[in-house]
Length: 245
Ligand code: GLP
Image (spheres, rainbow, N blue to C red):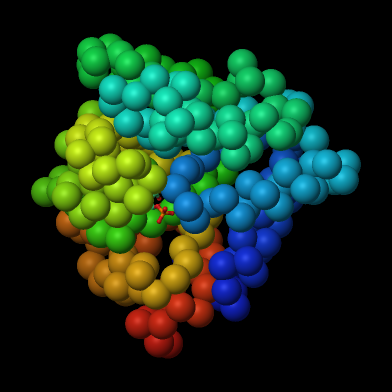
């Protein structure tokens, strides 16, 4: 793995956005695996401004998202489908028909997960996967577990994740308890993986994920084995790792 040290959140966002921009410039029809949460917002803002200046063209790009809450429709303002349109897709020239996200309204998990796995397969896999990091080391919504789950699946969200994501909802009991997420195999098969992490609150998760054993109890730890994994992190997020990375 490669570590790119950034001064702060803005610096990390710019550095990660540069990597994504280079990917799209070098391969305009790239399949981008995209993430939600607060961490990637700065990246999307930079990419939008470079698009507006004419530096990047997304017209041939495809985007597939990591996850979606079960039970939220794509017009619910806390759904990840809404987040992606609002924070990114509505502001660039990607063809919306080339953007994919699990359908949170399909309660038939088996049908929805196999539909999503087929989309990933038909796209030919992911060229660059962007990730954030959950406070418990989760990636997408792959929660700490006894095993790595390979393909798209339905997860019961952990209390840590519900508490962390409650800030986006009016109250904690409005946070959905389940989500669809790409599996670990879908993520590690991406040809390049870029993770952005910022802030002291993530320092323990960074330490556990990248300086400890590879274990499903810390899902992001699997990335230690990826051949092209880039961690872009600011000083606060790296504050506990010292010179271990
Ligand atoms: C959510 C998302 C993850 C994201 C994580 C961290 O649970 N499913 O993909 O990485 O939160 O979010 P944040 O960047 O807001 O800390």
